[in-house]
Structures are given as C-alpha cells and as structure tokens.
Image (tube, rainbow, N blue to C red; front, side, top):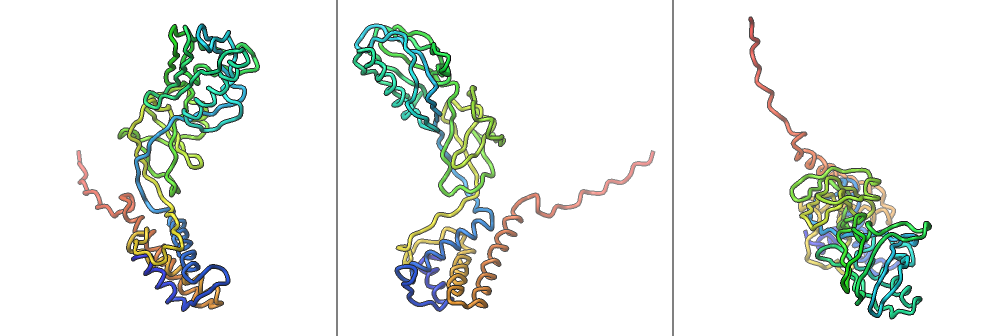
Length: 328
C-alpha cells in the first residue's frame, strides 16, 4: 500500500476535515499520526527483522594526560626529547584522522615553543591502520614520557616505540585501538553478529574499555549507537549484522507519495488504524478510537504470532519412534 493510500484511508476512517489548529493542514496531522503508528507497531513487536553488512572503523579515546616523548634530530622540526600530550581536550571515539590532527597540533605547538618551524605532518594511514609522522628530519625517536603525571600512551597509540633513522616515522597497529562501527540509524536490538562467517558472542561492555589485543574478534558489544569488537580486529573483515529495526519516519510532503509503506505488506493497515484512532480521540469519539485501536492491536498480535511460528524451536516436531525394550 502506498503512503498516499494510507493517508486517504486514515482520513476516511476518522471522517476528518482540514484542521489548522495544530499543524498546517490535514495531511500534516495524518502523516504525523501515521509515523507514530509505524513506531508503535515496531516497538510492540520488538522491531522488524533486518540484516546488513557494516564497515568497521578504528576509534580512539584521547585524554589530556595521555602523552608520548618525541625526539627529532636534524631538519626544520629539530626538537630535544619532549613530552607531547596527544590532545588539548578530551576526545571520545574519534577516528584515526581526527586523532592525527590533534597529535599534529600538539607536536607543532611544542615545536614553536622550542623555536622550530612547527611544520610536522601527522596522518592516519587508513589502509594499514597506523599513524605516520613526517618531520623532514635525520631521525625520529618515540618513547615513554618523562613526567610521572602523564600516562604513557606510546604503544597504545603507535603500537611501538623506538627510533627510525629516516625523515619519517611509521607506527604499527595501535595496541589500545578500539575498532567499532556505527550501527544503522534504524537499529533497535541485535539478534546475530558474525565476523568472516564466524558467529560472535555478546560480552559485557567493560571488556571493550581497554582491549590491548588485536586479531580476529570473538566477542562483540553494543552500546548507544555503536558496536565494538574484542579482540580489536586489525583488518577490515566481513561483519554481518542481523537486528531488529525501527522504521524511520517520513515527512509530511510524502502524504501524496506513491512509495510503499516500509512495514511488511500484510500490515500496511496497522498505522492507518492507529492514525484513525488518534484523530477520533481528538474528536472525542472514544468508542470509534477504541475500535481502531483494537484493529491496530490485531495486526500487532498477528505479526507477533507469525514471527514466533517462524522460529524452529516453536514448530511442532514428530514424536521419536518407540524402541521396543530388549529383554535379556
């Protein structure tokens, strides 16, 4: 059923007319109630099953007491051993590119303090998932900070420490890198997750606070609008997600749209009945509102039963054959 047809039915059932008291016109009112009907349907049936492949992204939490020590020999950015705080303010779940920009800003600020040019470039290698420092120097050394008030973030951020006798310094996969993915915007509840055809188990969120290990993930966790993995994967794998979705709202301009309703075809009338009930309720027609609300719940119950019957654990099974007793 098209959205335009849903609007027509809802208006007909509720015998509504133009109403400018709350919205621009009747279609605006009806569309608002139709959207609410879709949302209520999704909530009452615990979401509509959906599946999607998601792309993962390394993310970093940067604090103002996280630091590394940097020594640059030769070139315009020459700098004696100096503690470098990795960010000027707290940063949560930022991408490698954003983290690189913060690190670059802090390094160059210290460069200028030591009368160097402050032209070092820090980038995030999106292909190999590591940080790249270009100092235009003879050698670069990265190590632990001297001050006890700083947290040593060398291995966690760069994956290693030490010196490189080149103009640049290339890290490896960070030890404390949290690899995660933003969940779909219509995500309501996860039902199944796998990584490269291997099913993952769900784990408590505290497992992902400080992973300090990487490889093929075994566990996943969902918090807010993101999904995380442990161990942190060090490559882009095929992450398959099955979940229950909350269908997105459509705008009032869709009142004449020929697009199909996003609910399963058999339940397109559910939001129509819900919208009609709300409009009837506005008109103080309680009996009519109750009738339409009951018809809405009929659709909810029918969908719930149908989904339950599709679960093999609920299907009827044949009795096992009776094996005669063996008499010795």
